[in-house]
Length: 268
Image 1 (cartoon, rainbow, N blue to C red):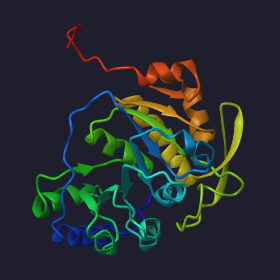
Image 2: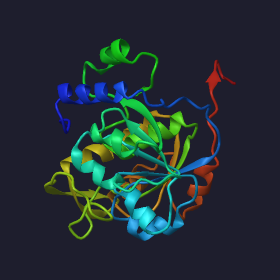
Image 3: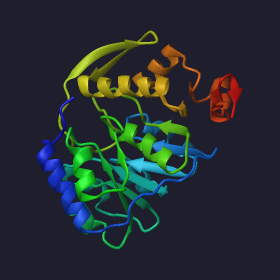
Image 4: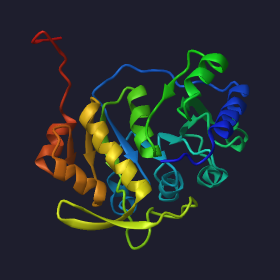
């Protein structure tokens, strides 16, 4: 899918971020704890009270949760557009803001004095070379086309490989694709069927849905999806060993699972 901004604009915004010399995100060894991701799909309206700490918000779920008295432990964003700032106009001192360097330049003045760490996300074919020349030895992630997908990779950097995900639906509900106000570009509806249910979605959301399934197939992490939606039904349909729906017997097994690496038939 095409990026929200041309690569040259994204690289220019990354350069502005680097000039602020903000703290950088570092790598934490993997552990067995579970990270809750609060994506901003419509089902978050129905499951937010079930969130368990630590919690990572993104996009509009930052405001959604804080308005309900739930302060996220982390907030992550990757959007280079100005409208994204509306989600953090009232930052909270107890939130650690893990912001991609490509975010709009006004981000850094808005979050001045708050707990901020930065990292880089792939913006195009030139990103890797740009990093090597302008900000070497820093984290560069190719997380995927949505902030929810990138949040999983950021969780991995923070040391998590088990995730309980809320609001990752990939569909419209009552003509809305988010749990609250969202100022992104309009997406045109298409129909999609999964696990016997018909959903209204879009090409952009389906792109991210398919990316998520492929990530589950090829990356070593474990996921339990909460709520009801197209993404949840796609996960149920493919029935992968490392993903389950909340409230099922499989969910407990997935969150308690570990990865065993084998070489020449011998675990290590």
